[in-house]
Picture 1 (spheres, rainbow, N blue to C red):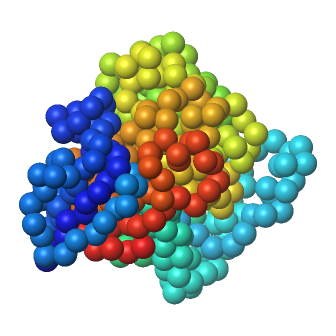
Picture 2: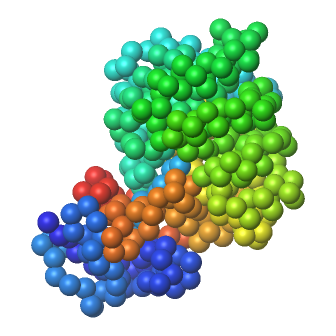
Length: 388
């Protein structure tokens, strides 16, 4: 079954060979979807026939958002912590343990229902690809079941046993690292594509992070790193050294960190929801972009430090607070996220790409930043199937 989407006022392809500038913009465009793939892209008058037709009504069409950093397998609520933080309490990594207790107490059905709910929430806002981490179990059984549940919804699953030291090992962090790199890793690897570590004060230092990531690599998992969120540290340099797909947060960077990212294939994934929700300084996207680093935007959706599932919100904040242009922010939220997941089939609208499409109730992608907080999603196709 093929579908012709015509009368597209502005089309973001993210392919400079198809249109103008880095976004590959096309005006008065059309797209043909055949099955789960994009079959044709070009000027509206030249569009071939298809089995069915959709009139975009002059609206903007862009690739589905690619959210490459999310923590969605959890239970419980941390409203009280957020309220206290907004009343002056500083943010630290320790609050994660509150969610660990609730997650361990939840049934598989409850965790799956929560995950399903948040994925649906994301889809309604135009997000069609989501990476999902473990990290709220911190025991072999709970980390493995978290990833097994996540793998039922997405192929982008990340083993984050090294989120913080489990409460049972509070006095034996070395023993916990041994568990994370041994028995727990063996149980989780069959359900994961990626391995991640929170390399930060209050979590894991550089040597511990290296041990976790190299053990994951030995099991065939590719590295990602929570890096340089709360202060300067070794996370970014370690990510680049080990060829990690992404260094995430990147809030506190030295010139050497910026140069390392710019000279590598590691994507700097920026998570403005975390700074918004913790009143921390925003990362300087302008500095990274001007240096030539690849940048992605993601929600960091989690119950403690960034409880937003909205990529449009992150785009708007990145433009307002982080020095990005609307074009750069949209590119980072689509093609940038795909690069951070080392995917070429998503984050773009071009022949052969997966038909993940986001139709805005607006004439331009710029409205995502121009009209912050306004629900602008008119339709969403995921794998060629209209979902919204």
